[in-house]
Image (cartoon, rainbow, N blue to C red; front, side, top):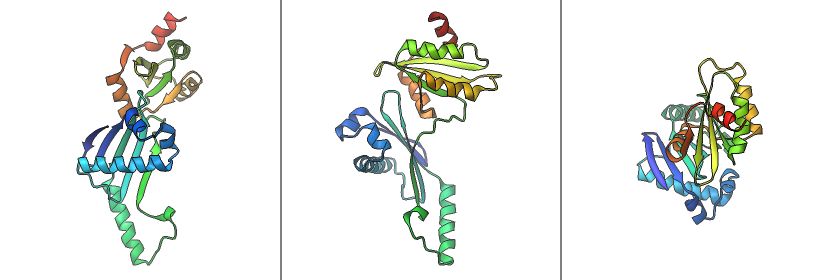
Length: 220
């Protein structure tokens, strides 16, 4: 497991497949929030926070889990000082007014665990394919689309191909619809900055630019 401090309020942990297997946990356990997986994540958080002196007893702590191309897990833990200040203010006001919360759903202290959103603010998306032929089917759709940049990567550990689809200059007005239609050919995976950086650093770049056009020409 690798732990790194991103800034004063955020840390990131990379949990490998070996780490998961050692504790008898798989990816479904994590995202189904099964008891053994939840306890495992809690121990990881405490260990990670302790190693970088991050106080996780703040009023607002968020946690984001995403699966990297080699099937390891990226766990990002963040604290928001602004939200924490708001929560403390709300607590003080509630105490003054004699308000009492009746159930856990109304507790101000928040710890959120969620899967990474598959919507990208930057307009960059990542699609996974099991073979180059499946990749080619998707590339034929993208080859004629205006203003879309594509790159192709290969991960040796899993034998999977990853197509990065990015919004270029003067993209088609139906860019979002085009991206959505690609799910018919491949699986959209998490597209946060950590996943993109990992993919570019740890996989083989087959085609850095105009991947869709080149693949569609080769496999036409």
